[in-house]
Image 1 (tube, rainbow, N blue to C red):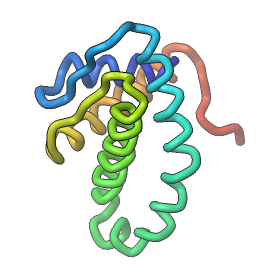
Image 2 (spheres, one colour; image 1 turned 180 degrees about the horizontal axis):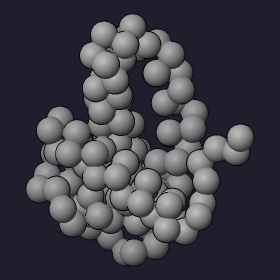
Image 3 (cartoon, helix red, strand yellow; image 1 turned 30 degrees about the horizontal axis):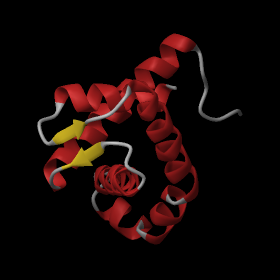
Image 4 (spheres, one colour; image 1 turned 45 degrees about the vertical axis):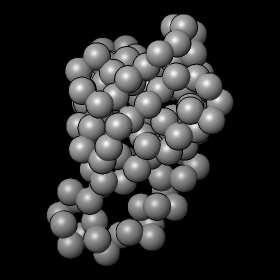
Length: 115
């Protein structure tokens, strides 16, 4: 649910990210985004670790943008309605999704990882 709300914030705040569909489809997109982040993102981070170190962590923004773009591509193929028009809207959207996810997790008390 946090992913879905974060994606809604990105749609509302970033020109170049659009959503055309019923509200319940955003919940499905949020679930897809969560799956992509839990399955593909760790592998991507491992393979790009030298770039992450070299850029002092800024390359993670590119990785997050790619994960968001993959989600949008899957959304289009499943006719769910999320579209991202370009690389920079994906980067801006990734920043907003990350920020909103952290804030919502903090407010709701949901923890990403258990110690």
